[in-house]
Length: 429
Image (cartoon, rainbow, N blue to C red; front, side, top):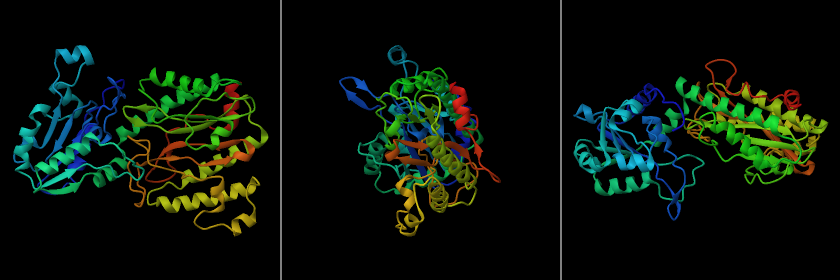
């Protein structure tokens, strides 16, 4: 790992929150992700399952966490199972967690090697009635491969069919959506690294650079600041490419007079940032580009004020739609007849702004959170309105990450990242 060791008090607290929601006489199991093969002996870079990380801080493959708060043996109320390390593994793969470093990382005192899992599991399964299994129920999930978690769950339920089954995911959706101070600090660090990348890009962009060269500037800055990668596949979209919402080819040359949409964020310690900014290739926006830019910025600023405790996500989007409609009228993109004749299920503004304004942010870029439940203080959301005009050859989206406060306007974690059009032009010259 490139990031600094996280105080294990965070993971101890997270486990306490989770176990307080468990039913009596129940046990919960969490697995690391697989290392996914590509071909021959090649693999994708390892990415830890966010749930086991959230509950333990363990960031390596072949790890299993068991939580059994009512276990008769106190030492078996929290157990980590790890791949046993040795000198051979250390030489070929690098150091893995020892029992001592696992305790320092997680705060869990009972650590066994993975080969003892079935034996210990048999003992504790005789002492509980309910198994919490961990399934992926995120509203955007589309999983076509069998995960290590799913494989383990299948094996566990076949071996112990008489136990009742409960779900971890609804508990985790609620817990993970409300951030601890330490988590907000880690997201802030990811945002600060993103800021450094953006300021570097502002100095780099000029006519005829390639989109992938800009991507490389961000990656350089991220790596030297202890981020291991982009938080998500970056979008570097010049000209009309900005009107493709998930444009990730980043393979076109940036032409004078165009603007570039940068939807780029660093991760830090597995926590995500999510930023969108616009850069004029020639260093100055045209009058029309700036008109649309400032309209989007006004929508973003007004939308941000609505992110308060008690707000319902769906209602919020309706209100943002009204603000956007007003701006589109002002820009001459809609007229009153468009509004009068609109389909209530697809309002007129959707022609130019077809995606949502906000999503949860945290260990995942589209983080856990139950969208039908009211917003709460210390939830982190993106705010990202956009106006896309293929007929005019450009699209504009602006995005910040904010923390909902008990009272008042959300706290902007990207407050230091230039967003005012004039400021961006000044930095580029």
